[in-house]
Amino acid sequence: MTDVRRWALVTGASSGLGADYARQLAERGWNLVLTARRRDRLDALADEIGRTHRAEVVVVDGDLGDAGFRDRLVQEATAGRKLHMVVNNAGFGWQGDFLDTAWSRWSAMLTLNIVALTDLSWRLGAHMRDHGEAAHLVNVASIGAWQPVPTFAVYAATKSYVRDFSEAIAFELGGRALRVTCVCPGGTATEFMDQAGIKLSKLSALSLQTSPAVVRESLDAVLGGRRLIVTGWLNKLMTFGTRFAPRWLAARLAALSMKPAA
Ligand SMILES: NC(=O)c1ccc[n+]([C@@H]2O[C@H](COP(=O)([O-])OP(=O)(O)OC[C@H]3O[C@@H](n4cnc5c(N)ncnc54)[C@H](OP(=O)(O)O)[C@@H]3O)[C@@H](O)[C@H]2O)c1
View 1: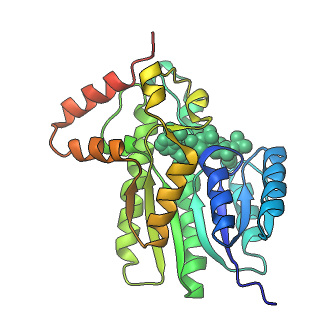
View 2: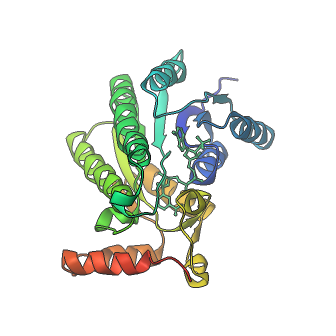
């Protein structure tokens, strides 16, 4: 019997949302190319998916901040196969005042959240447009894209870039078989908060969405051809609210929401 499963590439698949994109795409009938730096995590996930679903999984480990690795990833991901979905999910944040944080951290964040995502969108977007079959480019931003966020300034600005960039290229591609979706989660229970040095209050911790719920809602939106999805009703309400607040007020409220827990 011919395998009619299509192939999706998921970046940042070693934890959190990326691992759940991999699980849920396999469940929905996709084969997978998974990438991140932690090989052991990717191998364990590939094993788990192989056992629970009939999916084929290819693992390509490396640092997306490295242009040479991105060359290799594109080459290996497209060697002898067509991709029909690319999920640009890898990203990280850091909470700290701009001038008091080492430049190397901001530079790595700009490279991963913006340069790597744009590079993969360009190369793999062309690959998916050129094969002419229905395909999806999925770029993960954040509700941080809706306003300036003091102490999270660089991260939020990278996500504003992802949102504007994704919506603009979705417009350019309008009517083609390749669709672009920008996914904007709010606080989600993954390794992200710890990696970003964020200490959540008990109340904020309670308001986090689960990673499987965010992924389920976003994949429904992607496969339904939506250009933008804010996950979770509270996040939808908050982002809608920013339309009516002046930018200084939105920034002040965002600063309050980022106040570390006592
Ligand atoms: N969790 C939230 O509250 C939240 C809210 C809004 C948006 N988001 C966005 O959602 C996306 C996924 O985050 P998450 O919550 O799932 O966080 P996470 O659990 O920390 O996962 C981040 C993933 O990115 C990978 N990664 C980090 N640096 C990398 C690099 N240099 N090269 C390759 N892979 C790298 C990590 O793998 P390795 O360490 O193995 O490389 C990991 O698989 C991010 O873009 C984040 O900005 C998260």
